[in-house]
Image (cartoon, rainbow, N blue to C red; front, side, top):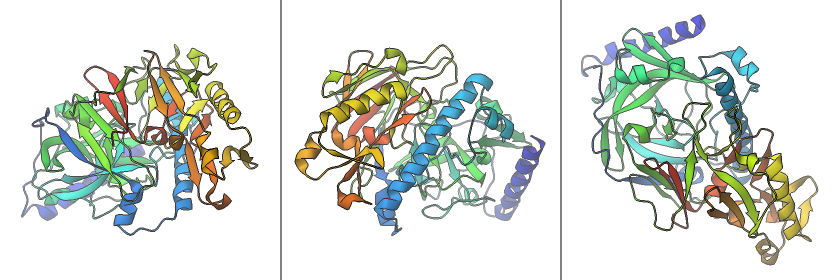
Amino acid sequence: MELLNLKLTFMLFLFFSSIVKYSVSLQYVHNNKTSINNASAVISLPLFPYASILKQHQHHLNYTELVQSRLASDAARINSINSIIQYKIHHGNFSGNNTKAFQQAGISPGTPVFPNYAGVYLVRIGVGRPEKQAFLMVDTGNSLTWIQCQQCTHCFRQFGPRFDPYRSSTFATLPCSSRQCNSFPKKFKQCSGQFCGYDISYSDGTYTAGILATETLNFNGFPIKGVVIGCGLDMNTPGLGDSAGPLGLGAGPESFPSQIRASTFSYCLVDMDSKNQFSTLEFNSAPPRDSVFVPMIRNPKIAAGHYYVGLTGISVGGKLLPIPRATFQIDGNGNGGVILDTGSTHTHLPKQAYEPLMNAIWERTRGISRDKTDSTCFLINCARDYERFPDVGLVFGNGKTVLVARKNYLRLDRGSGGGTRFCSYFWETKGSLSVIGMAQQQGIRITYDLAIKRIGFSPNKC
């Protein structure tokens, strides 16, 4: 911890030095209160898949590289989510760069909590005044919104220039005495004199450190003043899909929806491989009338963070599979359950659910060749074979079912098999936690009703 404090003190010294540099032309202020305005208004902004942003910025990454990047970051993220939840259950929240604690939690080195490349969706917002555009990664598994600042000592690649807070007249640091600083999780907070610093460690020992501040964020022409954000000054995380940082949509009190007191937020994910399509991320909009609503579930053993849902079973072709209901429940120790995640591409299921699911799919597709090197991949030679793959139903505790179409659980692997190799987006996980990933969420307007504590699914509403 002493090493961490030294690192943070040095970082803040560099940050303070930059204040002096711009003090002639800019007024540096502290902010003890936020002024979130028009919190009940409907906000809508374009939501882009990473592939379309690559095209706009003429970054070249072929399809095989995109797929491989997704696979690598997906496995790492699930391992990270499982490990972090386990650590929180047994030890509480993470505290700084506690390498020993990470090892005790069974967290592997080299396991980033953020997806690296293709498995992300981005929004573009305006930051500060004068307004500077920045792409942020939409992340329901992270609550703090932070952006990489110009004064960073360890930085990562991003689309466009880094944000310079001292060229913004609306940027205001939060002192340690502020309400927002005092309400920030103590384990992540590192106060140093006049600054409210933070240091959040992830599962591989990487971290993001910076200071808390308030800033005006502009959402597609709708400015919101006094939003608490992190100004990232020292990050050894990988590039977050080339974004400037995450837009925190998690269930924690510091998340953006919580700050603006949004009654709802919703998104519809277009095909992640699309280079020409986009949808919207919306706040305070009414859910579609045909939404299938399921209750949010709280894990009583850990603080708010992820969104749990009450999944009770899975059906294939309308037939309920023989999966014990306990497979998807949070047990008395806080293990298990089912979460929605916009940072994971695949849906990850424990063995008790994964094996019956894949067996049922294999039974319905007899005669279609499977790849000898990977039993989750199929060699499909005609449209008739593809159409034999059944819809998969996610069955919830209130009796409602959300259908997952074949296009949302079969991935075309153009890298081999002459374009006829399709692989499953369902993966087996070693832990008891189930994660519904982005592939299965595509094409569905998903509404997080924060007022009533429920989640709505409305197909074909992109």
